[in-house]
Length: 277
Image (cartoon, rainbow, N blue to C red; front, side):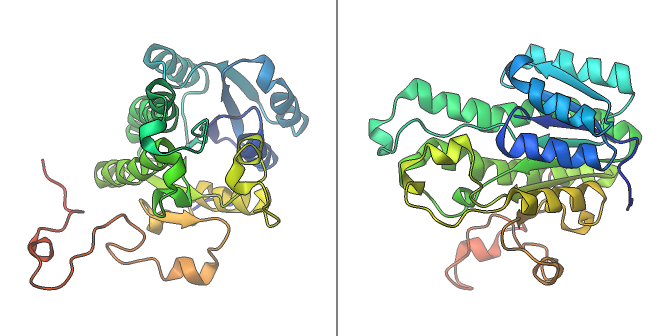
C-alpha cells in the first residue's frame, strides 16, 4: 500500500468529460502521471490542461477503444515512453440510444454499446495487464453500474455489457492476482453527466451521486487500500469502511446464481471461482 501516487502512471479512458475528467483531475492532484484516452485530442484538451495545471505530466491518446490496432499501438507507446502502467481506469462508456424493449432495438446501435462498454475494456485489459504482470504490480478498475445486477429492461445492451464486465473482472483476477495485479468493478451511482442527463429514466431525479465519492474510492484502490477486495463489485455511493470490511468472503459481491436449496444440482457444482486450466 502506498500513500502517494507520485511516479505512478495512470491510463484513464473516456477522460474528456464527466466521471473520466473528474477522476483524471483527482489522480493528477495526487501526483500521478496521466494518459488520457478519448476519441479526439481536441475533446480532451480541457482535461489535459487542468491536469497539467496540477503539475501532472500528461499525454493524450485519441482513439476508439474498440479498435484493436489503435489500442495495441497506444499501449506500446505508453510503455515505451513511461516504462510502466500502474493503474488502468476503464471508464469510457455509452448507453442505449433509446428506452425500448429488446425486440425494438437497432442491432447496429446495440452492438456498438457492447463494443464500447465491454470489448473496449477487454482490449485495454488484454494489452495493459501483461505489462503489469511483468512488474508484478498494477490495478485495473472497470467503471461498472448497478444495472449489472439489477436489470434495466429498457437498456438491454448496457445491462448485458455491465454484467459481463463483472465476470470478466473475476476471470482476470483468477490469474492476474497471483502476479500482483488486481481488478475491481466500481459502480459510481448516478452522477450527473451528459450521459445520465440524456436518459429519460433520470428525468425527474433530484438526488445525484457526488463525483467526489467516486474519486475517493478510485484513490483508495490506486493506493492499494482495497487490494483484499480484488474482483469484487464496489459501490462508490453507498459503501463505507464498515461495509467494505464485511466484503471478504469467497463469493461476496461476485455475480452468482443462487441454488434454490441443497437438493439443487447447482449446489453440488464445483466452486465457480475455482480456476480451470
